[in-house]
Length: 627
Image 1 (tube, rainbow, N blue to C red):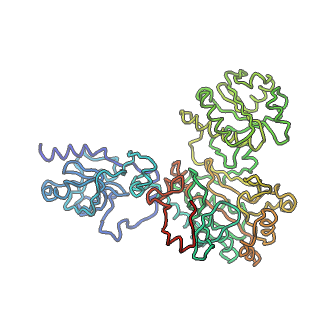
Image 2: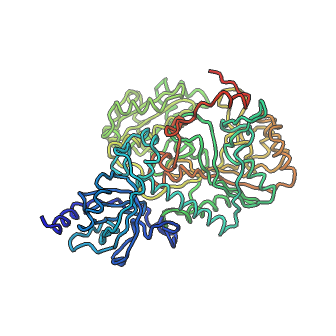
Image 3: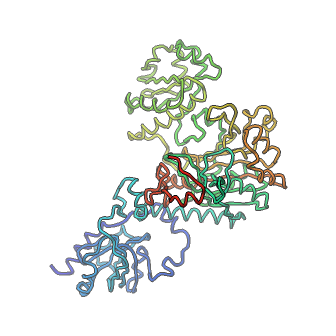
């Protein structure tokens, strides 16, 4: 077969060898980059050559993506792919270099850009109208055969394997897009805060001391026997001290640490966009964040401000959680007054308690799509850890035709009242829960999400796919009962949060009734930020620590002294950068937007950390290990 015909056949075979376009390609390309190959021997990237470059001598560097016989090979870098052609007269010279070459070997190619023959262009490739006629190939580094991970999107592997070989996983287009989007968005945030609004980027220490209250902190040994540093769970104290020092507009892309054990959506080390301002108030901090997100969001027009607001109590009573997913309705309904008159002892006996109630939700069309086993599984999951609840489900076969154990005991009047309040339709399922109100709300909040997940798993659309649904949740309680069951209260967020101005007088008489000046930012049902106006009065801060929380204020004497040294009113917020980016990128795991994350149990499969240390290291820090 003539060489020209062979080339034509092989070009056709390569037409479909393309890579998907990044959904945020325009955003990632929006920053003006004058030279993407500066300070390297390359003249161009693998994604920028076009017809206008025909005739130019070029040098490309990248990874071998694909090879067909001895004539064609495709070179890849993040910017794209370029098809190269080995001319017949060069085959003998180059064959020795290329014959045993494995995919993902690193090459430097010199050649001349030429237009592809008519009928052999690939419109799905940015470089699909040209190819590079090879003059010379230099193998910069050969790759071993049979890598455990490939760079192609369709090469799916387990998360454990991808984390063990993270340096290979990062080559995948999806990971490249996520990490580059992260970089671009952070840069937009820096520009907005520093250049437009005068914020100062200040780095704060990561070796500190324990903070009373809050999450469990990692400790770091020191050379002073019995003395330990702590890794800060946030730069909270430092940013307040900066306000005292006159840095009235602070921000930082901050590394934070929390020893919270194995949680699928958490990392022991994570990143916050940390912000603090002097002479501000809650509404001003919220406005700043809304503008920040609008200016840094990957696609213009997807973030509509101002964001809606909802009190903590409203969120709990409507959605059963303080971080409601507002992409769908299915709101909770209090039917306590209706159920008082029903003839069901399991319900009426529970309602003798003044803190008990009955709430319900209606799950649209669930009878058609969820089996009895599905419903039972969801209900069992939702009651986990919540004692003494009476959960009842009713299937609506037709209007006024209820199926379920409790349905037989309800009068037609009770059924009609519930139907009217929940707007019940045929084929719906009604879930009713009786018990202590706080547990009832939590149970139904879980049921709401679990039912939505179950329906969507069967192809039933529940959540809106249009845009991003932001929500501010405010007016949280300042204190909550202690989680360990002991007498007393603990901070709902952290001990530096200021009380609501209208509730300050209750701080000294009924602290459990005090609302806080705390606010959370919720996106699509996930908390992506939290902040507050801070206590800037040392007497109030000492009272909260010592009298209410029973904490040793001596650990915070430096902060209390600073508050007494002319501290301005101040407040701020921290955005969870990892979770925010995971939602933007459409991934279920924050590990997909972190270059080198830890596994769900806090380990690094790649480096096998945490690891043992030598006895000499333990002795240096006066540490003995108990097993």
